[in-house]
Image 1 (cartoon, one colour):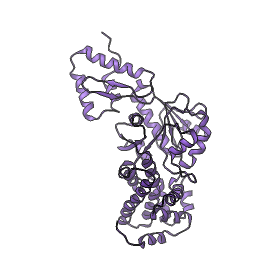
Image 2: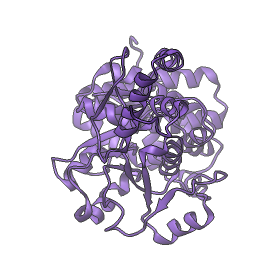
Image 3: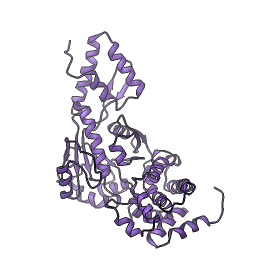
Image 4: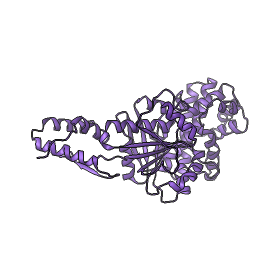
Amino acid sequence: MQNEPNFKKSQVLATLAITMDYNEKTALDTWLKQTQNKAKRTQFIVSLSNYFKRDTRIGKHVAIPGFGTIISSMFKNISIIGDGAMATVLAMLLCEKRDSSASLGMTVKMWGYDREQLEQIEKARENKKFLPGYKLPENLVFESRDDHIMAGADLIISAVPCQFTRSVWVRLKKYFPIDVPILSVTKGIENDTLLRPSQIFADVLGEGVKAVVLSGPTISDELAQKLPATAAIACSDEELARQVQITFSTQWLRVYTNTDIVGVELAGAMKNIIAIAAGIIDGMGAGDNAKAALLSRGLAEITRLGIACGARPQTFAGLTGLGDLVTTCISPRGRNRSFGERIGKGQTAAQAKEATESVIEGIATCESAIALGRQYKVEMPITTAVYEVLFEGKSVQRAIADLMQRQLKAE
């Protein structure tokens, strides 16, 4: 008989918690407590322990008597490209998962475009510029060398603002391992090309790139506080989506999968434009009725464009559509909403932009959305109104009046 390893029941449950629902975890806990056959119990624990000690990537399975087959593998070597708020909070999440499941041997590395800024974050163990107030894990590795950051990675996270995504990946292209999946947490549409982040990857890195998208109502500050949240992983490869889902799921972050990468990316980009409008309404004190109308009609506008671009309608009623839109439009922490609020209170677009160091993705996305709307002949009155305020100097009062006085029609 094999000796029982130093791999306690609590570690087993902590490791499997990422893939099991409450009933499954309770059943497994009961089974481990009640099983009188020590040899059977020990065999299970030894098998699980050996499984997680293997030097494997993804797609492996563990068979548990009475519970079917549970996919229990995660990516082990993760490289994060970017050092903004989302990059930072995902690094925190992944490093904590490593601590709670030490046998997985997960390594998390972060790279930043600006070496000096990255060194400041490492020295302070805090991202004071983009996510202040949260201590970064000691096991987070900072790597500023382009040729080292993706070495040995089995998952790469791209957390770079949309308008800088191309230049960053042109710079890193020669070091990118084409067989490794790349997960985008970027929300936007590139100016001029009108490409979504996953399309930029294909354009720069090659059509064979394995693109995955994480999106949804995920405000970084709330994730850092471990407040309950949900997100979706979008990928045309359902098995790969499932593997990424497992990697990011925690007790406080529930992750779903979705195969509509077009809809998920467009919804994530377009909601920032509506959030700017929501902020303007807040700044003006236009009231809750106006904001409710904005969100509902804004969602209709986003959905029209998405369908024209080949997305599925139901995506826009889900987490990455309605869910993300609501959060972005109501949260006082939202960059785009806050930017719009400053405009609503009387600042010019230039003044409102200068008030923050963060990238306001909705500004550039608005330009791209107008171009996409023209290309696909989609009516987008709210986006047009925001564009006129931001780029043509139209007053917010006039923009709202024009929207209200449009020709009457059926909803």
